[in-house]
Amino acid sequence: MADTAPRTGAARDWWPWGLAAAHLLHTLWFAAAYPEFIYDPDLVAYFVYWRNLVTGTTSLHDASYFTVPKPLLVFLLGPLDNAQLAFGVSALAAALFGALVYLIAKRAFGRSTAVLCSLVLLLDVDRAVLTTRASADFFVALFLYGSIWLALERRYRWSGLAIALAALVKPVALPCVVHLLVVPGEDRRRAWTGAAITLVALPLTLLSNQLLLGSPFGTQRLFAGFAAMSDGAQMATGELLRFVLWVTLAKTIFTATAAFGVLGIVIWIGRDRSRLTHPFLLVPLALLAGYVAMSITTPFITFFRFFFPVQVWFACFIVYGIVETCRALAPEPRALRLGATAALLFFLCDEQTARQFKYRSHFATPFQSAMSFVASTDGLLANAREQGQTILAPPAFLPYLLWTIDDVRQQPDLVRIAETLGSEGELTPPDWVIYLPTFFLRAEAKAPVDALLGSGMYQPVLASPDGIGALYVRRDHRVASR
Image (tube, rainbow, N blue to C red):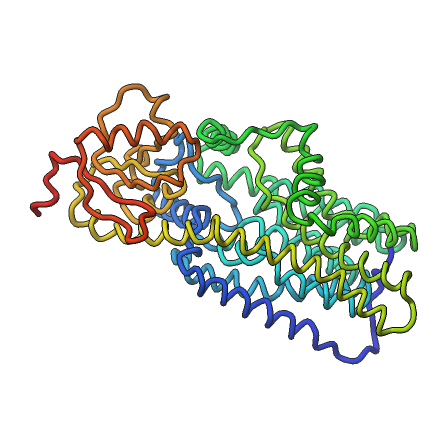
């Protein structure tokens, strides 16, 4: 394995600390700009799972849809029962991740390129969003990159443990153990011991599913429930790699610079063929293999965020490809080489900045407004809603309602989801409607809700100032007179 010998006798490197601080400050800034963003549906679902576990509530054991539990995060963040505290944990992890990217890239490419890799990561809107929301995909990336760095330090048992932690968030990370299986020479035994440690994730995941869902394989039921509600198509196995490598990386995220990433990989491996077994190459590719394997056994709807670790990896190779291209084409004078490098890096920074503004406009701001409105309904629902009354709401806010309303947590079917109304037959009209027209999973689900609200049966009792949504109640409840 190349580039794995520990470095000794070098002066102290302060870059990891400076970059960690930069990533921490950027995460704090993003959360300050979107304070409601921390109430991620997945995170709130961890709180619900934990409450159910400690109170002996089994209401989710037969639910047709809820957020799929991530065992490690349920047991790590669930006991906090507080989105601000969970964000604090994630913000510190974001600082560590920024330093890890630098340390790994320094081993692979050299210090100057490594600094650029970590700084470019600051412009990645997915990094900001996933860390602010304490996302499972961010923690998978954190543990996988931790495993890479530990392997480079020849701490193979700890590297295996890091893979196990990633797999306890998402089992698709298990194939990433491959980098420990190819360690040669006298380190092989310790590396294989580290690989064996990762297997502990399998029984722990099955046990967690049994405790939280009532079945070791209960997650398949939830995957199917989400697919039935969503417009998204379950990704065919043969299309998954094309979706990740072409649609996600080349056509969407790195539209102008993807070719430099491919060039960077070719140059890096071409200079040392032993790098074909380097953990920085194997781990991200093995994660893709994990998703491919999952698509065979459990078809799922694919989102860009699933491949965030691959995205960060490819961005590093784009930076390396740009630096090496300029070094080859303009070796002298140094000022010319630096100017050419800066010009090409500008295109990378420009596309990431443009993507960030687009994301913030089309998703971050609407979710911020919607979550702020949903949170504003807490007091009214607590005072005016009677126990057992039903609420029609978008699926994105189902975990929040279960978290904040005790009888709803005991009976999740008190929350009606518009996307499933047609499959449930004729039902009594819901008592309350949280109407957020831009948050339907399927466009056709909006029409029946609009018809229901236009029937004269409901009256608005609370409206968002920015028009993002409104809270309605059936007129026969006479909430206005209370």
